[in-house]
Image (tube, rainbow, N blue to C red):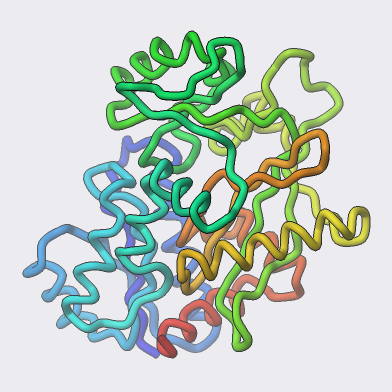
Length: 324
């Protein structure tokens, strides 16, 4: 196949979560080349004439879409698939509709609730209806991924939500909301399209080490994902084995992940993030279509656990796009 690996147009001084897109694009191209395909890379720009020129130059059979942000913001990630659809070019992963429904987290949580999937309660400004002034909440970006703005100070009592939201809005821009904080375990479940429906990969839990300070929220913060020399990064580790250790919990996580896949009519590949409370009840936090696909990301790690080497995993994702 001729594959165009389309990635975000990232500045050299961009934050690490944006620069990771370039690493993903390079890894995807090398993986496809190792499988005998012709893979080239190009940066996306939200200009139809420019995109048509790329297609005419590279003449791809399929586009591997790793555009995670446009203008430096994840909310515009739907532009790439929307424009590729207009050009009738096959591409990997989620459509513009999938991005729209899941990148807007409060909207996505409402879809979950209507669909009968348990998700923590939430509130949005300016009314902030239903906030309990004494209960803990986590203030999160409503339309960004990669744990942007998430740190120890993100968990606040309801009475402090407005102040925290305003601070984040001034620092990062965009919309913010408050989600009831589930003080429990975190699972990031990878899933992809399979011949018989969604295939759920081995279940990954983010474990917080024994030295985690008392009172420090157990969060996969921005530092935990992107800043290698920090306590958060080194103190949280991915672990597999839930299926053998806790079969009933594993059954529930797999069942809910498949339900979420069908509820949003997902395609390609995705990640569903859970918290599991002290009573063992899973709560869906959010859905990440076209989740990070670099060699050291959770999707690749889950693939390895399933016995699928990275190169083969990338080829499977690419071939699936031609069957849509």
